[in-house]
Each structure stands twice: as structure tokens, then as C-alpha cells.
Amino acid sequence: MRSLASLPIRNDQLAHTRALLIARIALVLYLVELLLNLTRPRVMPGEPSLSIFYKAPSGLDKMPGFADSLDRLLSMPRAVFWCLLAGIAAGVVLQIVAAVTTRRSDRRPVVLTWLTLGCLLLPFGLLSLVVVIEYVPVTLACVPSTVCVLLLLRGGVRFARVPLAALLAAFGWGALIVFGLGRAYSGLAFGTIFGYLGQSSLTDISRFAHNQFRSIDLLLAHLSVVDALAIAGGVVLLFLLFRHRVTDAVSGLILGAAVGLGFNFVESILYIKIYGSLGDMLGSSGGFAYWIRQSVGLLGGQVACGALLGAGLGVAARARQRGLVAAAAVVAAIGATTGADILSGWLSGQLRDQVDVGSTLDVLVVSPALWLLPQLPFIALAVVLLARGLRARAPALKAAVAKEVAAGSAITQAEVPVLVSPVLRLWAVAGTWRWHGRRAALALHRLHSVQLDLASQHVRTAPASGSQAEGQASGQAGEHAGERADLQTAVQQMDELRARIARLKGGQQPEVTP
Image: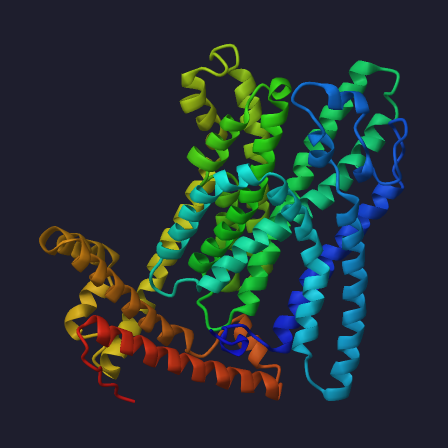
């Protein structure tokens, strides 16, 4: 069992300050949404002070397929709301205690910082937990496809790959925080927008319906902005907290895709349940929603947008004009999400008379194509960023492998051409499978993986640059002590990897040159 100190997490003041800044920004924006909702015009009869507590008319519950799910799908549980407020209050108290502790001991109270982040952000995750627990059968149906994509993100990049802890943290951020923030913000925003648009159309049914559709359009744009900012906050937070990792377009793309995958996981559960309950009204079904969101279109939507945003932030980390590049990535992600939600619906309406809705051609070909078509330019851009990022990593891979060849026998000169070329590695494994069987091929694959992990350590223990160098320049003695501890841990990990390579090669102990 690994101790907390052995995890590759930064414990310096810079990382904690910026992590708290992200949480405070999210909190302030939520309080602004809350204030705007409290001061909105009241439109519906019996409307509560906060629109998120609005209860659907009791007559709707008697309609077939509705049961009592409408309130649970479209409103916020009161217990969750009060937990949010309690978390905010606890977070403020902890920040005050942390400030006092810092002045007294002249050190950063790490535990209080993590507790503060938990109090400020985790209550939003209760909204996700309500959805996951409430609809367990749908949740279980979405698990296999989601796990497959997680494994793809884990194994798709072998050199300097994102650590498993960071990948799971990114997925958790998307599933708990991004979904929770999006639903909490947009639940308030819809009541606010509709309050201002609907107050002048109570006596005109057609105008009332028109304003309702306008509110939904504005809500989709609002949700796209909130989701993009929440995904960006998660990627930046992971870049800050996990030290000695390669911060570039590839790692950013993988983290962003993992955040988007977590968000899509919970969002899919909700959409599948909505279409399953209200399919007669919406003209679709839960099975169709599963087909689009968890099958043919799983790598699109939130996953593709998150990947594009993460790759853009990874590029921004190494760019001179970081703010401009990061802003462009956020705008591109917002455009991709909005286009997928609005433009695909418009295209579907244009082809409604030419295609039989619900037919085999519509379900298997037309609807997936119309949903993915607006996203293709953004997916292509993400693929280009991935290819450029992998190409940019090639010199670092060759240098790291050469350094390990000079250090000992864990990697020999004869193995260098295969290790530095993904094509040759694939060819070697495929040839081994053909001539020596599956077991030998898997053993070779494991050997290559461990050797690449060992080479990655040479990159991760190199002197920090960019944001990491900025953190080291702060002059805190505790930060330098943390750096030394991290380097010692990295050296121990390299020794463990060399021992594993020796076992995989047949028990020989590698010689290491200091």
C-alpha cells in the first residue's frame, strides 16, 4: 500500500494557491447564479423563491411513463442544496484557519488545503451521486463501454503516459464536479432566463412557447460555457498537482478526454432515463440514447470536446502567449459542444421529411451521422494536435532511451530501434504472436511497457520548466525538500523498474552505471 507521501502530488504553495483559486472562482460564479435566480421575476403560479425547488403539477405524475421521475430529473433535491451551502460555510472557515496556521508556523497547511477543496467542490458531486444511485440499472449498462475507453486512454500512449492516479482523478472530476457544477449552474440559469423572457407572455400561449424555446437555446449555450470552464479547471488543476509529468498536448488531450468521459458517463445516465421516461413526448427512447451516447458516438461529444480542450491547454503550457492559446482552446470547446447540441438538431429537422424517423436507416446511419457531423472539424483538430504532440515527443524518447542504455543493461543497444518506433513495437509483438504464440507476445508487450516506463522516468526527473520552474523559484524551503523527496522516490521507482525488467528477461540482474 503506497503512502500519501509517495504519490506524485505537489505539496508546494504555488500549486495549493492556484487549486484554491479554481475552487473559489467556481464558488463565486455559483453564488452569482444564486443571487440572479433569487431576484428574477416570478412567472408560474406558486413559484418558489429558488426555481430549482419548483415542483411539477401533481396531474403530470398521473400520465403514463411519468411516475414521479419528472421532479427528480429536473429539480435539485433540497438536501443536496443545503449540503452545498454547508460545504461553502465549512470551506470559508477552513480557509480562515489555514491563514492563521500559515502565519504562525510559516508553512502551508497541506491537510487544511485539501479539506478546503473538498468542502468547496465535493458537495456539487452529490448531484452526480444522486443520478448514479437513483438509476442503478442504467449506470451498470454504461459501465462496460466507459471502462473500454478508459483502458484505451491508459494504454494508447506508452511513453511518458499519464499516471493512473491522474487519469482516475480526471474521470472523477468529470463525473462528479463537471456534471454537478453544470447541473447546479444551469438549474438556476434556466429559471432566471425564463423568468425574464416569460413575464411578458403569460396571456399569449404561442409567445409563451416561443420564449420557452428561446430559454432552452440560451440554456444550452450557458451549459456549454460552464462545462468548458469546468473541464478546463480540472485539467489545469491536474497539471498543477501532479509534478514530474510531461505537460504537453498529448498529456493534456488524455486528461481532457478522461474528464469528458466522466462527464459523459453521468450525463448519459440522465439522458437515457429521460428518454426512457418521456420517450412518447420526445419521440425517442432510452435505447436510442444509449446507442448514440454510449456506443457509436461515445468518442464524440464530451469526450472529443474534452480532448480538444485538454490538448489546447497542454499546448498553452508551453506557449509564449499562454492566455491567448488557452482562451482559444476554451472557445473551440464551447463551439464544438454547442454545435453538437444545436446544429445536429437543426440538420435532423431538415431531413425529417426525407427519412422515416425510427427506421433502421435512421437509427443506424442517419441520426449518428447528423450528430457527429458538426463535431468532425473539432475531432480532426484534436487528432492533429495528438499527432503533432507524439511527433514532438520522439526526440525526448530517443534521448531517454539512450540515457538508460548508457546507465545499464535494462535496455540494450539492440532494443533501441524497436523501443523508439511505435510501428516497430507493434510489428514485433504481432510477429511474436504469429511465430511463438499469445503468451510470448504478451510477455514482449509487458517488457516494452516497463522499459518505456523506465525511459519516462528520465524525462520526469529532469529539471522542471514552465509552471513547475515557477513554483520552484518561490524560494520556499519546504518546496525544495519536497523536490528532493520526489527525486528520491523517482530513483527508487527506477530501481524497481530495472528489477522488473530483469525478471521479465529471465532473472538476470541489470548492471547500473551511476
